Each structure stands twice: as C-alpha cells, then as structure tokens.
Image 1: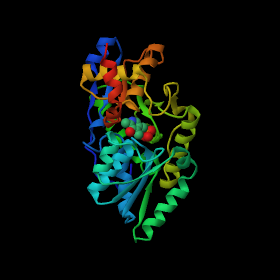
Image 2: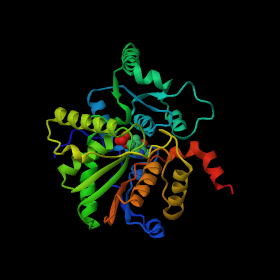
Image 3: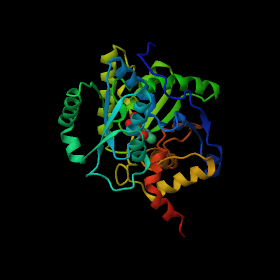
Length: 335
Ligand SMILES: *Cc1c(COP(=O)(O)O)cnc(C)c1O
C-alpha cells in the first residue's frame, strides 16, 4: 500500500502485551493492550500517529501555523502543541471552555502552555455553531502577518490523519502473527472523533487482519459515529482514490458507556483505572481509555464476547487526563 508523505514522530511499533495479572484476578479472557500510550513522552497516545501524516501535509503546503480545536483537556491539542514546537510551527489551539480557566493550569492544558501554544477559549455552543467563522477569522489574522495556516479538525480525524491507523493496522498484522492470536480477532478502543476506528476499519481490510473492530463511544451516540465513520471512510477513499473495502456492518459501535457525558467519569470507572494501575502498572484515563475499558469489562460480563479468548484493546493514551481528577481519586481512597 502506497502511503502519503509521513513524518516519523512516533516511537513505533508499540508493544502488544497481555494483561496477565488483571485478567487472571477477574477470570477474564486474555485482554491484550496495544501500547499506543508509549508512542512518545509528552505527545504520547493515538493522535501522534495521525499527526505524522497531518504535519507532513502541513510541511508540504509550507504552512507556518497549525490551528486546531478540542476540549479544554484535549489530548489531541496537547500532542499538536508539542509536536508543533518540535517541528518549528506556531500552534494556535481553540479550546472549548466557558472562559479563561481558573489557575492553576493542569494536565494537558499545562503542557499546552509549556509548549508555547497560543490559546483561545471559546464556549461550547459558539464552537459548535460558529466553527467556520472562528477558523476563517484566525486564518485571516495570520495571513495579515504573512503566515500560512494549516487547519486540523478535532482529533486529526480527517482523510489525512486517517492514515495513522491504517499504518497501525500493518503493525497489528505482525503483532497477531508473533503472538499467534487466532481469527476472528476482536479489536476494541475508545472512540471520540472516530478517526482511530475508521483507520482501523480500512486497515483491517487492507492488511487482512480478519478482525472485528469495536469502538466504545465516549461521547455522542451510535448514530452519530455511524455517520462520522462512514464520512471519514468516504472522504479518505475519494481523496486518495482507494477502495476502503468494508461493509456497513463492519462499523461496530458499542453505545451505552458515555455515562454522565464527555469528560465525566463515574466512581466505578475510576476504581477500574486504579485496579489496572495496581495490577498492571498501566495508566488508563478517565475521559477515554478508562471509560472504554470499563465498558469493555461490562460487555464481557453481559456476554457480548462469549467464546472469545483474546481481545485486543488499543491503549490510546491520555494519562495527563488523570491529573484534573486528583480530588476524585483522593476521595475514593478515603474509607
Ligand atoms: C482522542 C482519543 C481517543 C479517541 O480517538 P478518536 O480517533 O478521536 O476516536 C481515544 N483515547 C484517547 C486517549 C484520545 O486522546
């Protein structure tokens, strides 16, 4: 498969490791972690795989500024800020927040600050309804300074960033054969803007993984992701003239684990995160991986994976998202 230009930024291939102690202690089938939390230090997680392609395109277009969006604690924005600093781009982040957040800055936001990103705080409703105006305003603002802006959508989930998890699928093909994981395989992940899942769906077909690719959504609902992932696959296929080789029922969304909403986590999710840390020394996060992993455990209990001996969970990173939850974790420890 012919890949478009790519910058080698991520530490790949990442390991595939079984959660031996955790699964044994709970009588579970073997859950394997694809350790994409190890792709980098500060810019770790899944977004760097997509940004390898987005930033290569930005370079190709001779852009000076990277403009992107996300929640206040966005992992994608943090990765963009740090990689932009590494490559010499100016980075402007438009973050969803009612206003300037209170001090002290923590988690991903602290890292955005350290990386020298320009930060704008825009209320959710405005960002939702006026995203195009906001984007046009900043593009114009930088153009007046003679600077060219490359805009990256939320999560770098577009036809370009899509390639990140097509490339990761080639790695998984090797992992599956090294570890002798039988077919059909089950790959599970947290889905937030859909790009990781859509890339894996195309990669599954391209590299014959013989896998069922399951996304556990951490926001919105099944219908929203069905549309979004189809749109991503179509955009990729038309931009690069490639056949995505999937059927509609290959888009598998497991809804029902969003809980109180995006960025909110129940005590049960936090306890699961603590248990995984204790038994595996692996850090999940409250917004994406912990919520989805807890959802996976619930689905195993309900019988969705009956008869399956091996499940691959993509550890998409997000550990800096733990820090804004310090009070909640500390409270859990109390008797
Ligand atoms: C962004 C993100 C996801 C979701 O990936 P998408 O490609 O946006 O669906 C999952 N986990 C973490 C830690 C993330 O930062």
